[in-house]
Length: 238
Image (cartoon, rainbow, N blue to C red; front, side, top):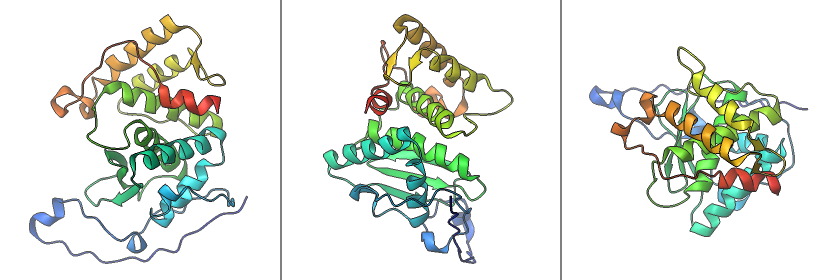
């Protein structure tokens, strides 16, 4: 295990008036970001991820330390290739400790105060969205978020990381995802009990709908059942 340490340069940013409240797309080379302490492997990222910032490339290579992570990078790359686009990761000053997939292969982010483990699991989460909806307008279906959080949970379990999702005054949502995971076979990519899986999925949907980030006022909605985890299933069986 070797550690890759990035020497990043501090740039003084002078903001005037309302610009202080606006997201700012910045050059990655001029940002102070955390050191990503991951395995130095010789993997080559797919062509669809070759244009992302270096520190994001390092995070993507970190996902290769697990089978599920490696499969997801390749699955997302395949979805992007079939849509004729490449991945973009854009730093936004207006965000804080956040990754946000906005569609068309683009993820906005700001993780200056996050640990390596947190960064890797959130990159994994957003790659599921990239594979789900690589091109066009986002569907804003809550079931796509449940799939992404479920995948994030399994990634954390397989890589020895602490699963973190929508933490506030309680861990209610995390518990709902863990309950859902009990009815999904990580090795076959299939539900172990379809009726119980659907029931647990509905409970998770109800819980996430209570969170301010996922309210109907922001356009989120629930699609018809039954619910599936198509991308996650493909990661397990390959």
